[in-house]
Length: 473
Image (cartoon, rainbow, N blue to C red; front, side):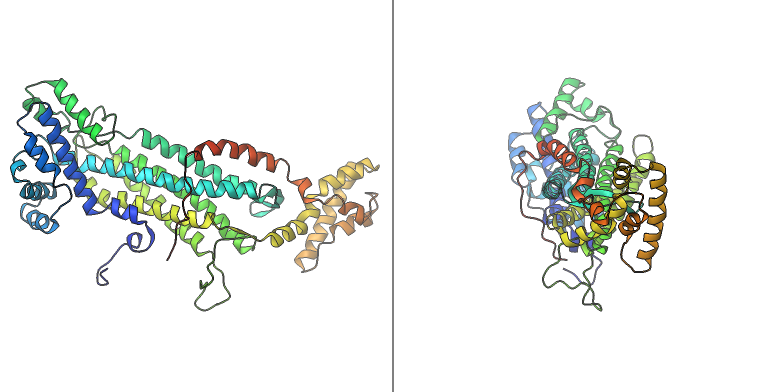
Protein backbone atom coordinates (compact mmCIF):
# COMPACT_ATOMS: atom_id res chain seq x y z
CA UNK A 1 0.00 0.00 0.00
CA UNK A 2 1.30 3.41 -0.95
CA UNK A 3 0.98 6.01 1.81
CA UNK A 4 1.82 8.93 -0.49
CA UNK A 5 -1.20 8.63 -2.81
CA UNK A 6 -4.91 8.86 -2.18
CA UNK A 7 -6.64 5.51 -1.83
CA UNK A 8 -10.38 5.10 -1.59
CA UNK A 9 -11.51 3.95 1.87
CA UNK A 10 -13.89 1.62 0.06
CA UNK A 11 -10.90 -0.38 -1.12
CA UNK A 12 -8.57 0.11 1.85
CA UNK A 13 -11.07 -0.32 4.70
CA UNK A 14 -14.57 -1.45 3.83
CA UNK A 15 -15.16 -3.67 0.79
CA UNK A 16 -14.64 -7.43 0.53
CA UNK A 17 -11.75 -9.15 -1.25
CA UNK A 18 -14.22 -10.58 -3.76
CA UNK A 19 -15.61 -7.21 -4.76
CA UNK A 20 -12.19 -5.60 -4.92
CA UNK A 21 -10.99 -8.31 -7.29
CA UNK A 22 -14.16 -8.14 -9.37
CA UNK A 23 -13.53 -4.47 -10.17
CA UNK A 24 -9.78 -4.82 -10.53
CA UNK A 25 -7.91 -4.05 -13.75
CA UNK A 26 -6.85 -7.70 -13.94
CA UNK A 27 -10.43 -8.94 -13.90
CA UNK A 28 -11.59 -6.30 -16.36
CA UNK A 29 -8.91 -6.95 -18.97
CA UNK A 30 -9.21 -10.71 -18.55
CA UNK A 31 -12.89 -10.26 -19.40
CA UNK A 32 -11.95 -8.19 -22.43
CA UNK A 33 -9.69 -11.00 -23.61
CA UNK A 34 -12.42 -13.55 -23.01
CA UNK A 35 -14.70 -11.41 -25.18
CA UNK A 36 -12.11 -11.21 -27.96
CA UNK A 37 -11.68 -14.97 -27.73
CA UNK A 38 -15.44 -15.54 -27.85
CA UNK A 39 -15.74 -13.29 -30.90
CA UNK A 40 -12.94 -15.15 -32.66
CA UNK A 41 -14.51 -18.52 -31.85
CA UNK A 42 -17.87 -17.44 -33.26
CA UNK A 43 -16.28 -15.96 -36.38
CA UNK A 44 -14.29 -19.16 -36.93
CA UNK A 45 -17.40 -21.32 -36.50
CA UNK A 46 -19.40 -19.16 -38.91
CA UNK A 47 -16.80 -19.28 -41.67
CA UNK A 48 -14.84 -16.06 -41.42
CA UNK A 49 -11.05 -16.20 -42.00
CA UNK A 50 -10.20 -17.01 -38.39
CA UNK A 51 -8.36 -20.30 -37.85
CA UNK A 52 -8.66 -22.82 -35.05
CA UNK A 53 -4.97 -22.26 -34.32
CA UNK A 54 -5.54 -18.56 -33.81
CA UNK A 55 -8.46 -19.24 -31.49
CA UNK A 56 -6.35 -21.73 -29.54
CA UNK A 57 -3.50 -19.27 -29.15
CA UNK A 58 -5.87 -16.59 -27.87
CA UNK A 59 -7.28 -19.04 -25.33
CA UNK A 60 -3.81 -19.67 -23.92
CA UNK A 61 -3.20 -16.02 -23.03
CA UNK A 62 -6.23 -14.81 -21.12
CA UNK A 63 -4.46 -13.89 -17.89
CA UNK A 64 -0.85 -12.98 -18.74
CA UNK A 65 -1.50 -9.28 -19.14
CA UNK A 66 1.45 -6.92 -19.43
CA UNK A 67 0.00 -3.76 -17.93
CA UNK A 68 3.26 -1.83 -18.32
CA UNK A 69 3.27 -2.52 -22.05
CA UNK A 70 -0.39 -1.54 -22.31
CA UNK A 71 0.25 1.73 -20.45
CA UNK A 72 3.14 2.66 -22.74
CA UNK A 73 1.05 1.84 -25.81
CA UNK A 74 -1.90 3.85 -24.51
CA UNK A 75 0.38 6.84 -23.89
CA UNK A 76 1.34 6.60 -27.56
CA UNK A 77 -2.05 5.95 -29.21
CA UNK A 78 -4.29 7.58 -26.55
CA UNK A 79 -6.76 4.68 -26.70
CA UNK A 80 -7.06 2.11 -23.93
CA UNK A 81 -8.85 -0.61 -25.93
CA UNK A 82 -6.43 -0.46 -28.84
CA UNK A 83 -3.53 -0.53 -26.38
CA UNK A 84 -4.80 -3.83 -25.04
CA UNK A 85 -5.52 -5.17 -28.54
CA UNK A 86 -1.83 -4.53 -29.24
CA UNK A 87 -0.67 -6.07 -25.95
CA UNK A 88 -2.81 -9.19 -26.50
CA UNK A 89 -1.40 -9.52 -29.99
CA UNK A 90 2.15 -9.48 -28.63
CA UNK A 91 1.57 -12.71 -26.67
CA UNK A 92 -0.64 -14.25 -29.36
CA UNK A 93 1.18 -13.14 -32.52
CA UNK A 94 -0.51 -15.57 -34.90
CA UNK A 95 -3.90 -14.09 -33.92
CA UNK A 96 -2.81 -10.45 -33.75
CA UNK A 97 -4.40 -9.66 -37.10
CA UNK A 98 -7.87 -10.95 -36.23
CA UNK A 99 -8.28 -9.67 -32.67
CA UNK A 100 -11.29 -7.30 -32.48
CA UNK A 101 -12.36 -8.18 -36.05
CA UNK A 102 -15.55 -6.27 -36.87
CA UNK A 103 -15.89 -4.94 -33.33
CA UNK A 104 -15.92 -1.50 -31.80
CA UNK A 105 -14.49 -0.58 -28.40
CA UNK A 106 -17.85 -0.86 -26.69
CA UNK A 107 -17.95 -4.53 -27.63
CA UNK A 108 -15.39 -5.22 -24.92
CA UNK A 109 -15.98 -2.31 -22.55
CA UNK A 110 -19.77 -2.57 -22.34
CA UNK A 111 -20.10 -6.33 -22.47
CA UNK A 112 -17.38 -6.66 -19.83
CA UNK A 113 -19.25 -4.21 -17.64
CA UNK A 114 -22.43 -6.27 -17.97
CA UNK A 115 -20.56 -9.47 -17.07
CA UNK A 116 -18.91 -7.83 -14.06
CA UNK A 117 -22.08 -6.10 -12.87
CA UNK A 118 -24.03 -9.35 -13.04
CA UNK A 119 -21.38 -11.10 -10.95
CA UNK A 120 -21.46 -8.23 -8.48
CA UNK A 121 -25.25 -8.32 -8.20
CA UNK A 122 -25.23 -12.07 -7.65
CA UNK A 123 -22.59 -11.69 -4.92
CA UNK A 124 -24.57 -8.93 -3.23
CA UNK A 125 -27.62 -11.18 -3.37
CA UNK A 126 -25.79 -13.70 -1.19
CA UNK A 127 -24.79 -10.99 1.25
CA UNK A 128 -28.37 -9.72 1.40
CA UNK A 129 -29.64 -13.24 2.05
CA UNK A 130 -27.19 -13.52 4.96
CA UNK A 131 -28.71 -10.40 6.53
CA UNK A 132 -32.24 -11.69 5.91
CA UNK A 133 -31.30 -15.00 7.53
CA UNK A 134 -29.88 -13.26 10.60
CA UNK A 135 -32.91 -11.02 11.06
CA UNK A 136 -35.29 -13.96 10.53
CA UNK A 137 -33.68 -15.79 13.43
CA UNK A 138 -33.77 -12.63 15.53
CA UNK A 139 -37.45 -12.02 14.80
CA UNK A 140 -38.34 -15.61 15.62
CA UNK A 141 -36.36 -15.65 18.87
CA UNK A 142 -37.94 -12.45 20.20
CA UNK A 143 -41.39 -12.64 18.60
CA UNK A 144 -43.14 -12.79 21.98
CA UNK A 145 -40.87 -10.42 23.92
CA UNK A 146 -42.94 -7.31 24.74
CA UNK A 147 -41.28 -3.96 24.15
CA UNK A 148 -42.45 -0.38 24.08
CA UNK A 149 -43.58 0.71 20.65
CA UNK A 150 -43.02 4.25 19.40
CA UNK A 151 -44.82 6.57 17.05
CA UNK A 152 -43.16 9.93 16.38
CA UNK A 153 -40.47 8.48 18.69
CA UNK A 154 -42.95 8.95 21.51
CA UNK A 155 -44.11 6.04 23.69
CA UNK A 156 -47.04 4.23 22.09
CA UNK A 157 -48.65 0.79 22.45
CA UNK A 158 -46.59 -2.33 23.09
CA UNK A 159 -45.15 -4.37 20.25
CA UNK A 160 -42.55 -7.13 20.50
CA UNK A 161 -38.83 -7.06 19.82
CA UNK A 162 -39.29 -9.69 17.11
CA UNK A 163 -42.21 -7.90 15.47
CA UNK A 164 -40.04 -4.80 15.15
CA UNK A 165 -37.42 -7.02 13.52
CA UNK A 166 -39.93 -7.97 10.82
CA UNK A 167 -40.32 -4.30 9.90
CA UNK A 168 -36.60 -4.19 9.09
CA UNK A 169 -36.80 -7.58 7.45
CA UNK A 170 -39.74 -6.71 5.21
CA UNK A 171 -37.82 -3.82 3.65
CA UNK A 172 -34.85 -6.07 2.88
CA UNK A 173 -37.08 -8.78 1.39
CA UNK A 174 -38.54 -6.13 -0.92
CA UNK A 175 -34.97 -5.25 -1.93
CA UNK A 176 -34.27 -8.92 -2.66
CA UNK A 177 -37.31 -9.08 -4.94
CA UNK A 178 -36.15 -5.97 -6.79
CA UNK A 179 -32.58 -7.27 -7.01
CA UNK A 180 -33.81 -10.55 -8.51
CA UNK A 181 -35.80 -8.60 -11.09
CA UNK A 182 -32.72 -6.62 -12.11
CA UNK A 183 -30.56 -9.76 -12.39
CA UNK A 184 -33.19 -11.69 -14.35
CA UNK A 185 -33.71 -8.85 -16.82
CA UNK A 186 -30.05 -8.09 -17.46
CA UNK A 187 -29.20 -8.70 -21.13
CA UNK A 188 -26.06 -8.73 -23.26
CA UNK A 189 -24.99 -6.03 -25.72
CA UNK A 190 -23.39 -8.39 -28.21
CA UNK A 191 -21.25 -7.18 -31.09
CA UNK A 192 -23.39 -4.52 -32.74
CA UNK A 193 -20.99 -2.08 -34.35
CA UNK A 194 -20.30 1.63 -34.09
CA UNK A 195 -23.91 2.80 -34.17
CA UNK A 196 -25.65 -0.45 -33.34
CA UNK A 197 -26.47 -1.33 -36.95
CA UNK A 198 -24.07 -4.31 -37.25
CA UNK A 199 -22.91 -2.83 -40.54
CA UNK A 200 -19.38 -4.23 -40.24
CA UNK A 201 -20.76 -7.74 -39.93
CA UNK A 202 -23.15 -7.22 -42.81
CA UNK A 203 -19.95 -6.69 -44.81
CA UNK A 204 -18.05 -9.60 -43.25
CA UNK A 205 -20.91 -12.08 -43.62
CA UNK A 206 -21.97 -10.86 -47.07
CA UNK A 207 -25.34 -9.64 -45.80
CA UNK A 208 -26.25 -12.90 -44.04
CA UNK A 209 -28.33 -11.68 -41.10
CA UNK A 210 -28.89 -15.20 -39.80
CA UNK A 211 -25.15 -15.62 -39.26
CA UNK A 212 -24.93 -12.23 -37.52
CA UNK A 213 -27.71 -13.22 -35.12
CA UNK A 214 -26.05 -16.58 -34.52
CA UNK A 215 -22.72 -14.89 -33.80
CA UNK A 216 -24.33 -12.71 -31.15
CA UNK A 217 -26.19 -15.68 -29.71
CA UNK A 218 -22.96 -17.70 -29.45
CA UNK A 219 -21.04 -14.90 -27.76
CA UNK A 220 -23.87 -14.16 -25.33
CA UNK A 221 -24.15 -17.86 -24.45
CA UNK A 222 -20.42 -18.00 -23.68
CA UNK A 223 -21.09 -15.54 -20.86
CA UNK A 224 -24.33 -17.08 -19.64
CA UNK A 225 -26.71 -14.55 -21.20
CA UNK A 226 -29.82 -15.78 -22.98
CA UNK A 227 -30.71 -12.52 -24.70
CA UNK A 228 -29.17 -9.40 -26.20
CA UNK A 229 -30.85 -6.00 -26.03
CA UNK A 230 -33.25 -5.76 -28.95
CA UNK A 231 -31.89 -2.46 -30.22
CA UNK A 232 -29.01 -0.25 -29.17
CA UNK A 233 -26.72 2.52 -30.28
CA UNK A 234 -23.03 1.98 -29.76
CA UNK A 235 -23.57 1.10 -26.08
CA UNK A 236 -26.06 -0.85 -24.06
CA UNK A 237 -28.88 1.37 -22.73
CA UNK A 238 -27.59 3.49 -19.85
CA UNK A 239 -30.97 2.99 -18.20
CA UNK A 240 -29.45 -0.33 -17.15
CA UNK A 241 -26.89 1.47 -14.98
CA UNK A 242 -29.67 3.53 -13.45
CA UNK A 243 -31.66 0.40 -12.68
CA UNK A 244 -28.62 -1.21 -11.06
CA UNK A 245 -27.67 1.75 -8.88
CA UNK A 246 -31.31 2.25 -7.95
CA UNK A 247 -31.58 -1.23 -6.47
CA UNK A 248 -28.27 -0.77 -4.64
CA UNK A 249 -29.55 2.54 -3.27
CA UNK A 250 -32.78 0.82 -2.24
CA UNK A 251 -30.76 -1.68 -0.22
CA UNK A 252 -28.93 1.26 1.34
CA UNK A 253 -32.25 2.84 2.35
CA UNK A 254 -33.36 -0.31 4.15
CA UNK A 255 -30.02 -0.72 5.88
CA UNK A 256 -30.05 2.93 6.96
CA UNK A 257 -33.47 2.50 8.51
CA UNK A 258 -32.32 -0.56 10.48
CA UNK A 259 -29.07 1.04 11.60
CA UNK A 260 -30.76 4.29 12.60
CA UNK A 261 -33.26 2.36 14.72
CA UNK A 262 -30.36 0.50 16.32
CA UNK A 263 -28.72 3.81 17.20
CA UNK A 264 -31.93 5.06 18.84
CA UNK A 265 -32.44 1.85 20.77
CA UNK A 266 -28.80 1.68 21.85
CA UNK A 267 -29.19 5.20 23.21
CA UNK A 268 -32.03 3.84 25.35
CA UNK A 269 -29.88 0.80 26.23
CA UNK A 270 -32.58 -1.56 24.96
CA UNK A 271 -30.57 -3.09 22.11
CA UNK A 272 -26.85 -2.97 21.36
CA UNK A 273 -24.73 -3.82 18.36
CA UNK A 274 -21.74 -6.16 18.88
CA UNK A 275 -18.91 -4.73 20.94
CA UNK A 276 -15.57 -6.55 21.19
CA UNK A 277 -13.77 -7.15 24.47
CA UNK A 278 -10.91 -4.77 23.65
CA UNK A 279 -12.90 -2.28 21.57
CA UNK A 280 -12.47 1.40 22.47
CA UNK A 281 -15.61 3.48 22.31
CA UNK A 282 -14.02 6.90 22.69
CA UNK A 283 -10.49 8.27 22.86
CA UNK A 284 -11.47 10.56 25.75
CA UNK A 285 -14.49 8.90 27.38
CA UNK A 286 -13.36 5.36 28.10
CA UNK A 287 -16.77 4.34 29.41
CA UNK A 288 -18.53 4.93 26.09
CA UNK A 289 -20.02 2.19 23.97
CA UNK A 290 -20.81 3.97 20.71
CA UNK A 291 -22.90 2.28 17.97
CA UNK A 292 -20.06 2.87 15.51
CA UNK A 293 -21.00 0.10 13.06
CA UNK A 294 -24.57 1.25 12.78
CA UNK A 295 -23.28 4.80 12.36
CA UNK A 296 -20.97 3.60 9.58
CA UNK A 297 -23.86 1.85 7.86
CA UNK A 298 -25.81 5.13 7.89
CA UNK A 299 -22.79 7.08 6.67
CA UNK A 300 -22.08 4.76 3.74
CA UNK A 301 -25.78 4.44 2.93
CA UNK A 302 -26.08 8.19 2.46
CA UNK A 303 -23.18 8.06 0.01
CA UNK A 304 -24.74 5.23 -1.97
CA UNK A 305 -28.15 6.87 -2.12
CA UNK A 306 -26.52 10.01 -3.50
CA UNK A 307 -24.36 7.97 -5.90
CA UNK A 308 -27.47 6.58 -7.62
CA UNK A 309 -28.17 10.05 -9.03
CA UNK A 310 -25.10 9.71 -11.24
CA UNK A 311 -26.64 6.94 -13.32
CA UNK A 312 -29.94 8.76 -13.64
CA UNK A 313 -28.25 11.90 -14.92
CA UNK A 314 -26.07 9.90 -17.30
CA UNK A 315 -29.02 7.94 -18.70
CA UNK A 316 -30.96 11.13 -19.32
CA UNK A 317 -28.16 12.96 -21.14
CA UNK A 318 -27.03 10.41 -23.73
CA UNK A 319 -26.94 11.92 -27.22
CA UNK A 320 -28.43 9.98 -30.09
CA UNK A 321 -26.36 6.81 -30.76
CA UNK A 322 -23.49 7.61 -28.38
CA UNK A 323 -21.73 10.30 -26.39
CA UNK A 324 -18.61 9.83 -24.30
CA UNK A 325 -19.50 12.06 -21.38
CA UNK A 326 -20.70 8.95 -19.56
CA UNK A 327 -17.31 7.24 -19.40
CA UNK A 328 -15.41 9.12 -16.71
CA UNK A 329 -18.49 9.23 -14.48
CA UNK A 330 -19.24 5.51 -14.88
CA UNK A 331 -15.63 4.55 -14.08
CA UNK A 332 -16.23 6.00 -10.61
CA UNK A 333 -19.93 5.79 -9.83
CA UNK A 334 -20.59 2.20 -10.88
CA UNK A 335 -17.69 0.40 -9.15
CA UNK A 336 -18.02 2.56 -6.05
CA UNK A 337 -21.74 1.84 -5.93
CA UNK A 338 -21.00 -1.87 -5.82
CA UNK A 339 -18.13 -1.52 -3.34
CA UNK A 340 -20.24 0.68 -1.08
CA UNK A 341 -23.22 -1.69 -1.10
CA UNK A 342 -20.83 -4.56 -0.38
CA UNK A 343 -19.39 -2.66 2.59
CA UNK A 344 -22.86 -1.85 3.94
CA UNK A 345 -24.05 -5.44 3.70
CA UNK A 346 -20.86 -6.75 5.34
CA UNK A 347 -21.52 -4.42 8.26
CA UNK A 348 -25.18 -5.46 8.31
CA UNK A 349 -24.20 -9.12 8.51
CA UNK A 350 -21.92 -8.38 11.42
CA UNK A 351 -24.45 -6.32 13.36
CA UNK A 352 -27.49 -8.52 12.73
CA UNK A 353 -25.54 -11.62 13.71
CA UNK A 354 -24.83 -10.19 17.17
CA UNK A 355 -27.65 -7.91 18.30
CA UNK A 356 -27.72 -7.90 22.08
CA UNK A 357 -31.11 -7.47 23.73
CA UNK A 358 -30.94 -6.00 27.23
CA UNK A 359 -33.99 -7.83 28.55
CA UNK A 360 -34.02 -6.06 31.91
CA UNK A 361 -33.97 -2.61 30.33
CA UNK A 362 -36.64 -3.60 27.83
CA UNK A 363 -38.87 -4.96 30.58
CA UNK A 364 -38.27 -1.97 32.86
CA UNK A 365 -39.25 0.41 30.06
CA UNK A 366 -42.39 -1.61 29.41
CA UNK A 367 -43.32 -1.56 33.08
CA UNK A 368 -42.76 2.18 33.32
CA UNK A 369 -45.25 2.97 30.57
CA UNK A 370 -47.63 0.05 30.96
CA UNK A 371 -50.05 1.86 33.30
CA UNK A 372 -50.71 4.42 30.58
CA UNK A 373 -51.00 1.74 27.90
CA UNK A 374 -53.45 -0.24 30.04
CA UNK A 375 -55.82 2.65 30.64
CA UNK A 376 -58.28 1.55 27.93
CA UNK A 377 -58.55 -1.90 29.51
CA UNK A 378 -58.90 -0.30 32.93
CA UNK A 379 -61.68 1.87 31.59
CA UNK A 380 -63.52 -1.16 30.17
CA UNK A 381 -63.18 -2.99 33.48
CA UNK A 382 -64.42 0.12 35.31
CA UNK A 383 -67.53 0.20 33.10
CA UNK A 384 -68.18 -3.47 33.90
CA UNK A 385 -68.14 -2.49 37.57
CA UNK A 386 -70.79 0.18 37.06
CA UNK A 387 -68.77 3.20 35.98
CA UNK A 388 -69.68 5.77 33.32
CA UNK A 389 -67.45 5.46 30.26
CA UNK A 390 -67.25 9.21 29.58
CA UNK A 391 -66.58 10.05 33.20
CA UNK A 392 -63.83 7.40 33.44
CA UNK A 393 -62.23 8.69 30.24
CA UNK A 394 -61.99 12.20 31.69
CA UNK A 395 -60.55 10.90 34.96
CA UNK A 396 -57.91 8.96 33.02
CA UNK A 397 -57.02 12.06 31.00
CA UNK A 398 -56.63 14.25 34.09
CA UNK A 399 -54.73 11.64 36.13
CA UNK A 400 -52.43 10.84 33.18
CA UNK A 401 -51.43 14.47 32.83
CA UNK A 402 -50.76 14.73 36.57
CA UNK A 403 -48.75 11.47 36.66
CA UNK A 404 -46.72 12.55 33.64
CA UNK A 405 -45.90 15.85 35.34
CA UNK A 406 -44.67 13.90 38.36
CA UNK A 407 -42.45 11.74 36.16
CA UNK A 408 -41.00 14.84 34.49
CA UNK A 409 -40.13 16.08 37.98
CA UNK A 410 -38.07 12.93 38.50
CA UNK A 411 -40.62 11.02 40.55
CA UNK A 412 -42.10 7.58 39.89
CA UNK A 413 -45.29 6.87 38.00
CA UNK A 414 -48.28 7.00 40.38
CA UNK A 415 -51.04 6.76 37.78
CA UNK A 416 -52.63 3.64 39.25
CA UNK A 417 -52.77 5.17 42.71
CA UNK A 418 -54.48 8.27 41.30
CA UNK A 419 -57.05 6.20 39.39
CA UNK A 420 -57.77 3.98 42.39
CA UNK A 421 -58.12 6.97 44.70
CA UNK A 422 -60.73 8.50 42.41
CA UNK A 423 -63.14 5.76 43.51
CA UNK A 424 -64.88 5.77 40.14
CA UNK A 425 -63.20 2.56 38.90
CA UNK A 426 -64.25 0.47 41.91
CA UNK A 427 -60.80 -1.17 41.91
CA UNK A 428 -57.83 -1.19 44.24
CA UNK A 429 -54.28 -0.63 43.03
CA UNK A 430 -53.64 -4.36 43.45
CA UNK A 431 -56.65 -5.23 41.30
CA UNK A 432 -55.48 -2.81 38.63
CA UNK A 433 -52.00 -4.33 38.64
CA UNK A 434 -53.53 -7.70 37.76
CA UNK A 435 -54.48 -6.14 34.44
CA UNK A 436 -50.87 -5.13 33.75
CA UNK A 437 -49.57 -8.31 32.13
CA UNK A 438 -47.40 -7.12 29.17
CA UNK A 439 -48.23 -10.15 27.04
CA UNK A 440 -51.89 -9.09 27.07
CA UNK A 441 -51.03 -5.88 25.22
CA UNK A 442 -48.99 -7.13 22.24
CA UNK A 443 -51.96 -8.02 20.08
CA UNK A 444 -51.11 -10.51 17.32
CA UNK A 445 -47.40 -9.75 17.21
CA UNK A 446 -46.30 -13.38 17.59
CA UNK A 447 -48.75 -14.60 14.97
CA UNK A 448 -47.73 -11.82 12.59
CA UNK A 449 -44.07 -12.77 12.96
CA UNK A 450 -44.83 -16.45 12.33
CA UNK A 451 -46.92 -15.64 9.26
CA UNK A 452 -44.28 -13.35 7.79
CA UNK A 453 -41.38 -15.71 8.45
CA UNK A 454 -43.33 -18.47 6.71
CA UNK A 455 -43.19 -16.31 3.58
CA UNK A 456 -39.51 -15.51 4.04
CA UNK A 457 -38.46 -19.11 4.66
CA UNK A 458 -38.70 -20.25 0.99
CA UNK A 459 -36.34 -17.42 0.00
CA UNK A 460 -33.67 -18.97 2.22
CA UNK A 461 -34.06 -22.53 0.89
CA UNK A 462 -30.74 -23.71 -0.45
CA UNK A 463 -28.95 -20.78 1.11
CA UNK A 464 -25.98 -21.92 3.15
CA UNK A 465 -25.26 -19.75 6.13
CA UNK A 466 -21.57 -18.90 6.33
CA UNK A 467 -19.58 -17.12 8.99
CA UNK A 468 -20.56 -13.57 9.72
CA UNK A 469 -18.46 -10.98 7.94
CA UNK A 470 -15.41 -9.99 9.94
CA UNK A 471 -15.17 -6.24 10.32
CA UNK A 472 -11.65 -5.23 11.26
CA UNK A 473 -11.88 -1.47 10.90
